Length: 251
Image (cartoon, rainbow, N blue to C red; front, side, top):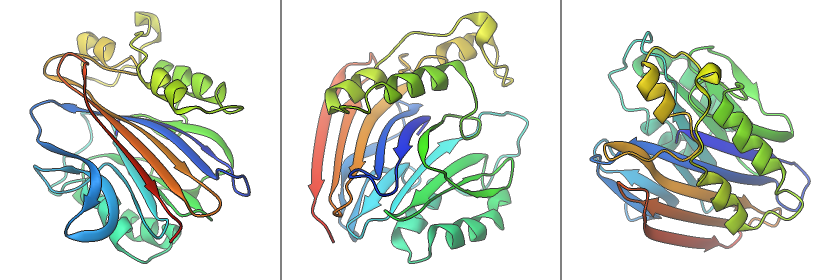
């Protein structure tokens, strides 16, 4: 993923409500959201190049999501970041235990943010900062820097997301994820990739033939154990090319 906004509300009827965009090169082969034949009970999209995922859940209520850190100065890892959410989903460790293990091997991966949790706890790790932190209740977001870094696109997405919380209908969440308004040049971060790319990547929804938003996902985790997921997929011109909706019963 390249942008995730979410409300973490322990004790609420919907402890976790999340809206996210996955941005990627269009040439990278991908399998849409669904149950994995080789891992029954795991529901996620699949990167067919390296075999991992960017966001997924399990029937038992485990959740994981990943974004990259955009910083050309960071060393490139020899292992795929997509295996990090996948290993948590396939495992049995608590979110905190898992991220502490990940922290000890983060040097094998290019920069990443990793969000993992259950209905009871949500934890976050940023490989650049190296800190394992418990997510506090509230509205949060992460793009390609750290948790709640005030990039224009993330601030815009969080504000739009927060405005839906009284009545968070899925069409409204998808609409905020489809926002193509870019940031003013004066507000752009300088991550070392050049002005043209900073402009392209400054919108919530990214549209260009080589690289752009490949999928938008809405996830609801309910207090009774139900999980609802919707993934909408896009083509090279930002057109909708598919949609998958899953309603998972309590484990």
